[in-house]
Length: 43
Image (tube, rainbow, N blue to C red; front, side, top):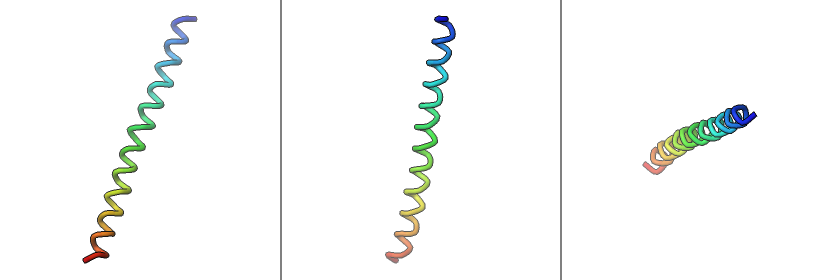
């Protein structure tokens, strides 16, 4: 049972890590898109 619990912990940790990575990429994309449209409106 110890091996199974460790595997479960690794799966949960991987899902959390992937969630943060995807979140940061999406946030950077969204911020870059807003900055581009914002600078074009200011000009």
